[in-house]
Length: 384
Ligand code: GLU
Image (cartoon, rainbow, N blue to C red; front, side, top):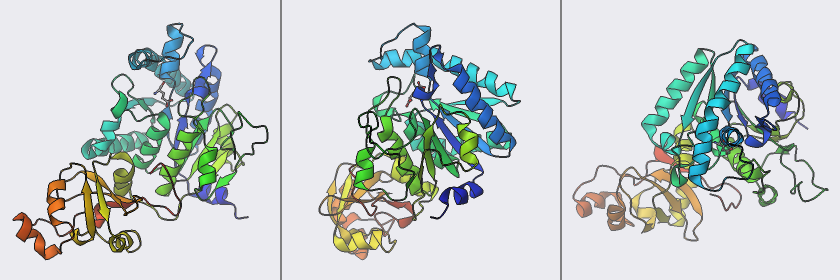
């Protein structure tokens, strides 16, 4: 069998590493030994010339410990307050550990609205690339104290997937409390087998990734799987690996068979299309006919009014919408050049009829192919 790992590692320069709460938690709130050993590994990699960006959880866990709270926090304000207490400590622990290895760190706290706004997204990108040029280790977490419900990334797996895109990582390593993705939930079945390589997303693989979490984790394997799916869609390989294993990062980079490797998918989305596909919330739907569906997904064409048979939702020029087939399958997501009201008037018409109906025509296409991300894969997924 082809050694995919070796090929991937040979091309890797920029690594995004995500460490989950379940890895970082110890009797002292944060597990200082684990953090020290992960930081040593990361510093080793930095010394070897890799650029390392870290997405870390642990703020809430650390804040809870300070407040001597042992049970799971339920309300959002409690979690936010704990994160506000814990984030400072989390950074202090990391910066001390990195300084022992001769490296400095920078703190970046983000919310979903920071990456859905194109300008802010670009600002984050510029800041991160400057930090990497300066040899600083960026340490990123969700800005928990301001992020509520709809502006939350949902979890740090999702945040890390988005950052992998921002920094154009060559590899995303997601460190968790178990060995990788198993074919069935290992917490339930003793017969569960570790999946070494995922080259295609199937319904079986998706079913294997359950939402169950350890007591301090968030999202379970499901959110790790979804994050892997997102990054591999833009050609970034992902390894889900056991964060508590000694020398885990150095060993992974030395090519050891650790965890589950998700291979990049053949069709690569460019960074802007990824941003459209995975960070923007769809404001509505355009139902399109079979001809338009084929033109979009197989021929890389723009969406014209003639292929549209229905419009759902209220949206404006520039909003993201899903393009769906008659049976409701989501085929693509893109930024519209007309409002929902306008599209309703011009649907099914030829391009040269647009100005007649609307009194103006700034664009021929309802969605230009440059602003259109094909999200349909060759498998059925409930999560798209
Ligand atoms: N941002 C949270 C924290 O630092 C954790 C979120 C997550 O683990 O997904 O505690």
